[in-house]
Length: 214
Image 1 (spheres, helix red, strand yellow):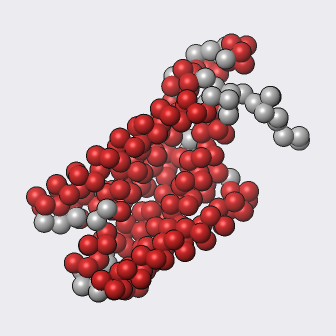
Image 2 (tube, rainbow, N blue to C red):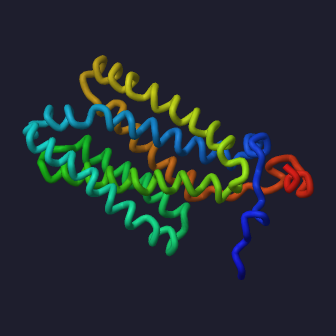
Image 3 (cartoon, rainbow, N blue to C red):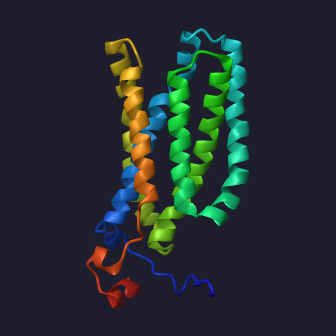
């Protein structure tokens, strides 16, 4: 069937989007992701050195993240075309969870390289997925206003994650007490995205005629 044009697209207003569970489901999933990502991202390189990995090796391995991110950017388009945006975005969360596990259990250079490479892939999948899912669910006309609310939440959560991680690690002497729960959070976020359904008129509490006029 022919693809709908932008003029035929059902675009939700910010008010309608905020009244739908689909918006809060996406925002919660990506907010939890940012919390988990920042928790590890800020402390992983010193952690690798604490595990006995030479600083020069850590620096070299860190460069692999950019390479992996570029590879992910090249892969994500064909993967989305074949498997759909939600599945590929869910895979991004799983990549992040695997990266976290490898970081927590680091005992060798191979662990470090793998953790950083999978992290880079996950970032590419999640950035693209987030940029596509909101317009797919809510249309493009008001997407700036809708994404503004979602990003405010995710950035606020991300900003709190780093200091909280440092505080807990200082009190307990280990990152494990916060990083293992972050792995669980990423798996939950993956499930939230994988099972999400596009919102309906009933979700916004608006009749179709009113929604089209918005």
